[in-house]
Image (cartoon, rainbow, N blue to C red; front, side):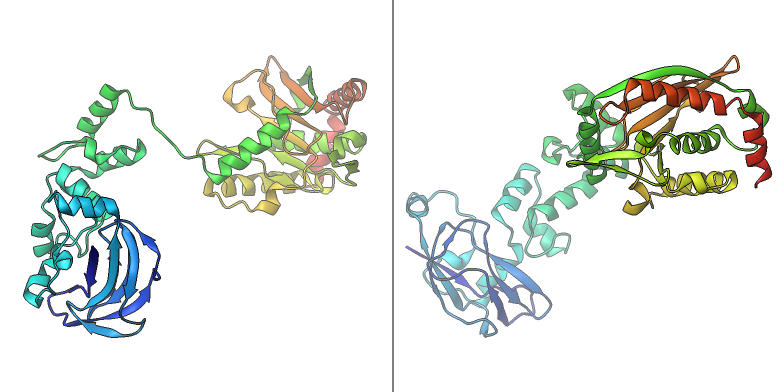
Length: 402
């Protein structure tokens, strides 16, 4: 049996349509819901769908040609299942295109109620009358699943309820409702069904996970010690983070392992100290990089940290600003955390974790890549950092140079 598809009447004023583009060719297999062509009416270009399974037998007009409404434009040879379906007189929701006689324009005006099979099924489950809503322009012609979903959402759910539905990836067909639902009702449903919130991993989070997975494979060990905090407190015009950036940069220039990274079969050692600084905003971790820190003044370091903080909060850091480091620094001391370990960032050699000041001391933890820095060298580096922190002349000189 052949299924004839006619030039549809896509608006009340449409007398003929123009075939813009065929999406199928002769002998192509098609199934319910497939878009077979794009047709231009007197108002817009719309997709023409197939509502039966079969094989394209013939295309009767060419792309760019026009034909009166009701003209046969394509024949589909039905699959065996479709033939049996029709023979048994089961439910048939397609329009008059299946009749063996060509429809009149009056009959074909029923195309105003056209909708995809999936849209019809969803509308039926939600007790939505597609044709009635199309008649009063509440649904577009033709209607698709997204149109039914949007109508149902606006009709039966408050904006806050819709926000919860989206947040928890809920199916609106699960809510068999007759009156408008608020966020409380949706939240009760979520609790009753014990539904977990599902969040897609963003590209940023994927990059972070990849970086952490890479860091976890390193041969990492830790060294713990305390730093005398008296000069950090005395010269508090600059923050603890800024002072540690300057101190670590000074010491890195004396220990090349802390300026190194492994890439492939080579160890690369930077001429200057480049430091990544852990910052967070909106539950996201960023590691902007200060380049050539050994040449920067305290004011420049402080200003640059402030600039990066604003960029992190506004999510405007670019890729270049987060690359090229060989040492990392993470300060959680301002939260009151006494001591913690940090994950080494990307290809860095190590990272310093700075805790809160307590009884005049700051807890400091170094996490180190054993492939680049052995324990003895790490211990010497820690001792050098502690020594610089006890040199008041260093602090005075840096403040004077501003």
